Image (tube, one colour):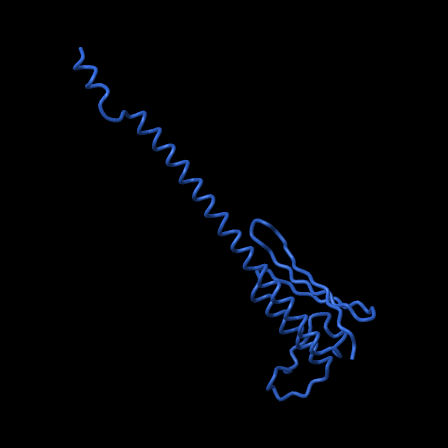
Length: 152
């Protein structure tokens, strides 16, 4: 009888193996979930960084061309005012060109990106620069800054 008892207790049984398999599976699912959340957070940070850089770029363009004024609103126009383009542009034409090229950058770098600038005629004028985009799983997101630029 003692010999039979030792034989039964030796090794793993099927139930123990299945329990171990379930525990390992739950752990692996948890690791995969954390990995997915990390990827999503990385993507969001990437697009937020681009939005901040794009808004700062437009603020710098406005500061450089203060006489562009109200021309920094709207869709803009491609006027050949790039450096070295040979065109002699007015401040309004340069502002329209800046808007056109900046909005093209927003569309190219952001998913469903939209860039807008709104000028308030206060003293000094205030420009509200907004970069909006669609984030998977989060919906529409935007970054907005307000810049006051005194006239020359």
